[in-house]
Image (cartoon, rainbow, N blue to C red; front, top):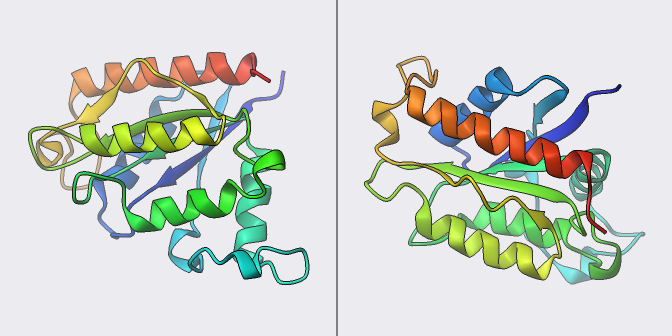
Length: 187
């Protein structure tokens, strides 16, 4: 059997992002049969503009994003929390990916959400906001376990490696749930 392809998306643009490090940890701890690649184009996406969202004018970066999402069996999103919500760049990516609504690359796509933050609440509010967005896109969201890495700097070493065993266990549970959804897609 061919490995299931999961596209990991970090909502952070920072070079030393702990959310991107969390995606690398997901690659390391992925169950057998799950291959996770990390999307590299967030910074290059133009702001969503419906006037550009035509076959003739669609930016190449957007076309590539949609192709990568369409080719994936599922998505794994690691989001920071900015001002009690998701970062603008991640929302912009979702806006591009969700169009046109009837044939969106997110339609029925299995999606798992996680996040790392320096504070005591992890990315609770950002994940709630992101879940709301994925209701509209009719994505097949993994709801449990929730992976909200609080005090994240204490759970990674200087090299960005996840060192907290409880977080590893939660991450593995999330990946198992995503794999199950990707093996048996809804829709």
